[in-house]
Length: 151
Image (cartoon, rainbow, N blue to C red):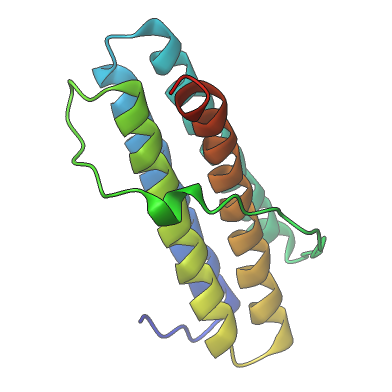
């Protein structure tokens, strides 16, 4: 796991991670043949860009406020097998990939929070974990509404 020496290094890491997510969802949108799926992934790319902007603002202003909230976990991703990303994947597979990606990001930030050397760094990581948890929940709700209810 990466070791950080400053809040700025953490923010740079998080900003780069959010940019990776923007590119991931943008690529999924570009590859999607289904217009509905394309729109969903474009929306998530936009949300990740907003998170990146928020982190840049924190970096520029030097201030940060942790808003603690309880995020429900449907745990759907825990019971699904991994799916390979491909241009021809189904909407269901795309949702699985997205859930797994958000779960991995949540775990990363949670682990980093546990290793943080001070409360300020810990709070930044917990806030980032919370954002990833919200994304995972949205994908799980989408999966529940459109995949599980159809079966």
